[in-house]
Length: 123
Image 1: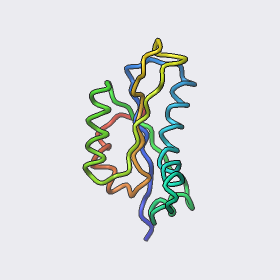
Image 2: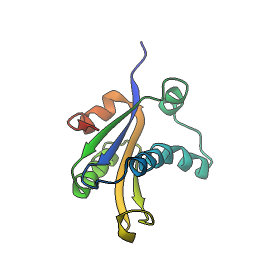
Image 3: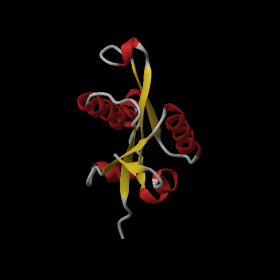
């Protein structure tokens, strides 16, 4: 039986930025794990390869603050999940202030990600 694999993108809802900016930030987070592998000249794990060979399932959820985002990021890392935090440079929004906008967790088996993210609202 195939196990469900996904990546969860967690966006901050308090930033109120343009939709295009939000999509770009989510895209950054979704690809960081792969860029990291390439930079390290490493191969994807079994679950990452399975995900790439299948649906590329992504779920987008939200948190209400930077504090909540950072806490979730640490919780994901503590759970042994691949997680990447995106910090925007503030060049086009956020008045020139570097701003932590989102994280991506996974790809990994849903049974590993759900304990960390299942309580969050869909975006």
